[in-house]
Image (cartoon, rainbow, N blue to C red; front, side, top):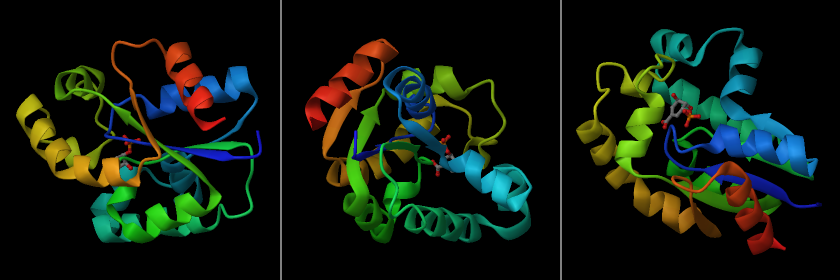
Length: 168
Ligand code: S3P
């Protein structure tokens, strides 16, 4: 496939799982934004937030997205906050299709509750907080997306098929 796919959605929506499936079974190259930023910076996302704050991290996200111009056949698993910046959405639109993976706050909570690698959820690990932040973000996710795919309930292969069919 010549097009790139940008997977957006809340933390725990399943972006990384779907992205790996697209790499392993559909021959796409994978870029996991958080991982790439951690490698570039030589420290974890939590450490970046602690040392330099959220805005610094957001600037790294934008820089990484802009550097992807020219890629093809690549699936990008975006950090959950990426579509909050208009310039990020514009950069994604230029080089591919934007897929919003949506999931309920309850599903998200179940998927994230045992991890401590997401600074925004540290000390806020509960369904109400997730529900609130998700509600603030949904308008941005929806307006950025070319298509929306439900990522809870559906198995990962079905999600991939739905994505690929809808962008063909
Ligand atoms: C964030 C999501 C995280 C990571 C950072 C901030 C967010 O990525 O980029 O902790 O603002 O939603 P995942 O969505 O891959 O967990």
